[in-house]
Length: 88
Image (tube, rainbow, N blue to C red; front, side, top):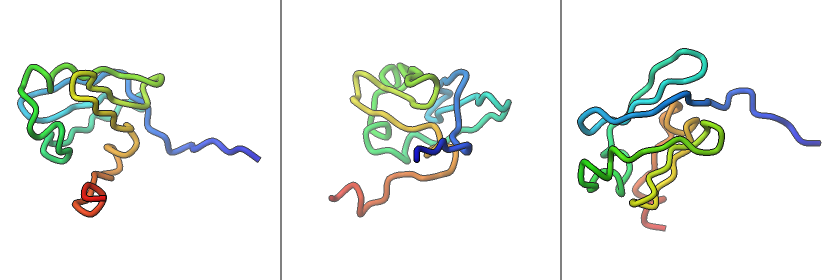
């Protein structure tokens, strides 16, 4: 039987200020995280970092030029890549 994750975060919009990624959620929360939490974002030139778009009906952030996708729920819940996950 399929279930739906009722804790899944959905974004209305996203943007970058400095080296922080900001997300406005459908429940009116604003959350942000530093680009340094993701290796591809940490080393990205500012214009590429700012080229973030919403995908999957607001459930994912996408940086096309960097080939990076981040689930909004993961970012909201602070589930960032670990050094062990990056090495594997």
